Image 1 (cartoon, rainbow, N blue to C red):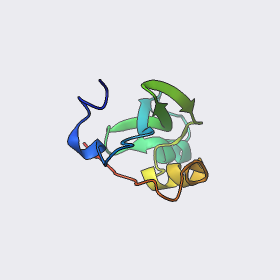
Image 2 (image 1 turned 180 degrees about the horizontal axis):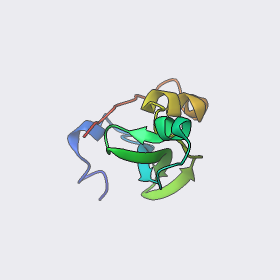
Image 3 (image 1 turned 60 degrees about the vertical axis):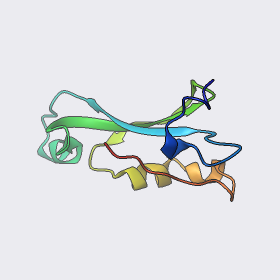
Image 4 (image 1 turned 45 degrees about the horizontal axis):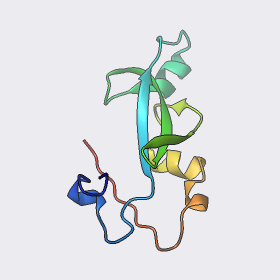
Length: 98
């Protein structure tokens, strides 16, 4: 049933999607330190946040990674959490922003 209702960008053939990666931001209280304010400010959310990465597999959360400063990009989160080590050479990465 999951495969039947899967949006087109997530359907690549017989095996379809094995994992979904969600990089998300969590609002935090504004730090008192100017440096920490700068590191945690998210221009996207227009507030101070921490960013985290969640892996969903088989319709359930399978991994939750540590939180980082909002200034870290999605690519940097992916690299820092060594997600490439968990993927197979035939896996395809699709980025859906928005």
